[in-house]
Every structure is written in C-alpha cells, then in structure tokens.
Length: 408
Figure 1 (tube, helix red, strand yellow):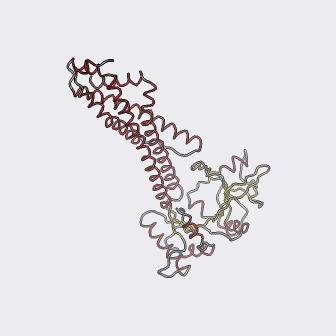
Figure 2 (cartoon, rainbow, N blue to C red):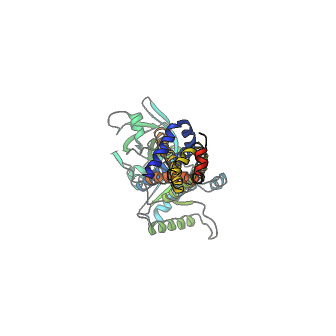
Figure 3 (tube, helix red, strand yellow):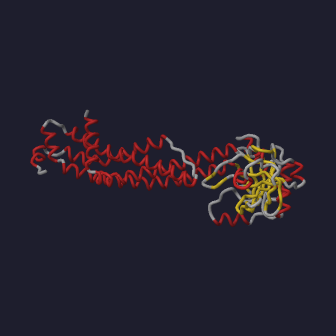
C-alpha cells in the first residue's frame, strides 16, 4: 500500500503541475531517447550488414590494390601508390591457387544505361568473370548468368539488377531486350534477385557484363579485385588467405622484409571494422546522453526540494499521525523514482519513434532490442532514486512541530 500510495501521489503531482513536470523530465527524456535511438539504429546496421555478409560471400577472400576500409587521407594516398591488380594477376591466382574452390575477378565504374527513351547516368557497371554470380551467392531469379565461353569471347550479354528492370525495361519479359551500356549494346540474359537498400542507397542499380567485354570497352586501366572462394570458414579461410598472400608476393617478387603491395581481405574485416566504428559512435552518444541524464537528475532533485518546501505542513501532519522517518523518506524516494521512470518511458517511445522515422526516410535499418529498453528504464529510475535521496532525507528529518507551524 505504501508503494502504490507513493506512486499515486507522484502521478498526481505530475498531472497537477503539467508544465513543471515537462520541464522537469525533459533531461531524462532526451537522455533516454538518445540512447534508444542510437542503440536501435546501431543494432539495425549490425544485423543488416551481418545478414548481407552471411548471404553474399561470407567465405570469400579478396585481393585488391586498396583495403576495403581506411581511416585517414594519408592512408588513402599511400595505398594509391601501389601497383594495380591486373588481369594477369588474376590468371596467375586462378592457375596457382590450390586451396581455392573457385576464383573470379571484378572491376566497376559508374556509367550510363539506355533502353528506348529511358536512361540513367549513375548505374554501377560491373565487369565480371563468369564465376562471380555463383561465388557471391547471387540469386538470378530470371534467366541465367554468363557462361565461360561468353566470358572468354567478350559476348555482348548482361545480367541486371532489379532497378534496371523496374525503372527502365518496364513490363513484360526482360530477357532478350537490348540495352546500351555507355553506348555499347548488350542483350539481357539474367535478372538478379532484389537486394533492397543499404544505408539509403539502392543495391539493385547495376549492370554486369563479362569482364573481357568490360576491358574491351573501357580499357585495362584501373585495378581489379580478385575473389577467391575458400569453401569454408575458420582454419580454411586462414589457409587460403596465407596461400593468396604468398602467391601475390611471389608474383610481385617482394623481398621477405618488404611490406605487401596489395591487400588480402575477408568480409569479416569490413564487418569487424564497422562494428568498432558503430560501437565507438554509440559510446560517444551514450556519454552525451549520460550528461543529459545527470542534468535531468539535478532538475528532479531541485523540484523535489521545492516539493518538500511546498508540502512541509503535509509532512508535519503525517508525522503527527504516526508516520516514521523511513515512511516519509520512502514516500519521496518513490515520487522521484516515479517521475524519472515516466520520463524514461516517454524517452523510450520517443527514441523508437525517431529511429523508425529515420528508417522510413533514408531506409537506414533499425532493430529494437528489449535489453536496451529495460536498461534505459532501469537507469532512468536509478537516476531518480539517486538524486531523490537528499530531498527525501531532508523531508524525513523535518521536526513535526516545526512543520505543523509552517505557513501554507
């Protein structure tokens, strides 16, 4: 009964002084909403990237001129000085790698695609070897991928993403339709399964043509990315990475003490780096949210001190009727905890709403985690209890005679 009575008194005080209550709880609301928003978006990003990596090429090792990710401009400039990965490098790896299940290569650029009166200028043009679709677990839902013969003889065929079909080719069977890729005609032989968006960017606005045709159209300038299917994770991945590194070092005649002039990566490399970046970003926001919670707690303490002053006579009456110090202490602690808990609930709802709005606007993935909600509510309540101790102790220590003499 004491607990329920304390909660009831707290809710009545919040409802009676609505504006004061809003101003009191705004710090707690902002702090909790910030934490929930960031955790929801961070978990969404992690889950999305993990699902894409596990679905598309989880066992693939890549060889490239530059790593998938880098932090500083100095690193970028240093990587740019490296030699390009060439078609000859690809053929060397393809013939020499003993542990690789299959080997492929890719080169990309942004270009224009025209079909009838429809055209684009920002489509990703992919030069693929015939092994790339199967190696990346790309599901071709209509038609087929390249054959080895088509790849070898630079056949004018193309596999397209879902955006090309939906936005350009229109209704009807897309197979056999002729599109012009930067002015060169190609016949559509396959349509890939839609992959949706990643961080607001469509993953389906692309056209893949045989690598030989790509090099014939755009020249052999630029660097390839070589893909090797390890056929499994763990020790097999490590062994394939080691073999590829040795082969590339032999290919480039590097001395034993020389650093690699290329990068050997796995999908897990990008996943781990993204996880660290998101965690660091989340830690910064949580720290800022912690400051908001502290400020909110100080405001709650200030309002509770005001409440003690306003209710001095009430406290005197309760003590005169037999209320003990611990009863008064518990009453005010329950009130401060209830106030902050209400702020936490509002913050949780607001944080989830903000995250979902961001998802709707820019298609940034979001996943609500129950643990984040429970932790946020616990922390909000703990803040109210911590900063409510002093006002509650001050109320409990009031002399009943002095309190009864107080003017309302």
